[in-house]
Length: 294
Image 1 (tube, rainbow, N blue to C red):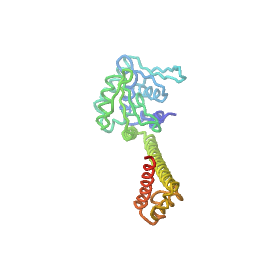
Image 2: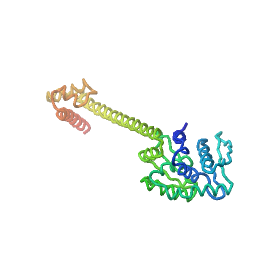
Image 3: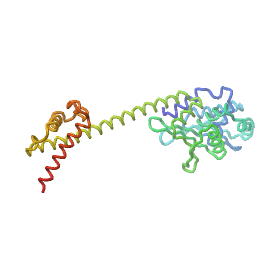
Image 4: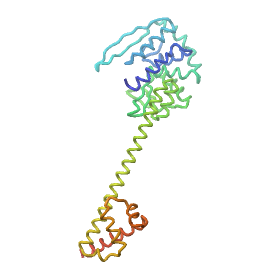
């Protein structure tokens, strides 16, 4: 099951049509369906729980079962359709819901959003990306949903997809809050846990990359120092170096993968001290190479 499917299943398990705010939930799911006007109230969805709740909302409010149908798509998935076309029943239903819009407040908004999400919402698997979106089907739904989300400090970003308005969120914190607000607490906690694991994994990867880069840098520096020391030996100039430089050179040859700090400990000096000695050896080698080229 997809993550969005888990969220819908969690909302479905809350039995939103059995509580105090049945009208608010019903208004959200009906308004955000495929069609909501005086001619037809309908939804088409691949989620069977959504189609059931849509039908239950109509049946519970006006004691009328809407028409159900299903059709198999080309990709093998089913599309579940629920439709109320009786104009008298539609008028009765709209009369019941007439005052809901004006009375939506802080306590009722979560239940409206539950319905809206079931009808036109989706959320991506947090393992892949952080993305929640709503695709309201018409201008009335667009305006109301934008006003409601903005009123609770979650103003969505807006884009167009095949001519349809898309409200979306990319910040994981906002998605977590909206899921929690809608009552999908388990899904919100799952997102939080996934984010923590991803952050830890990313930090570990960064640390590993940094360590690898440091090792590469150490190996290259050590190899360059070894080449300079061996060059001085081949040219018979090594024994002419001061004792402290020869000591540093021999320590490097004996410990090619030890850091400057490690060499400093072996030499009984500071890191800057051992670095200065090795750099002086490199300058002597460079000077000798330059003279040979003339």
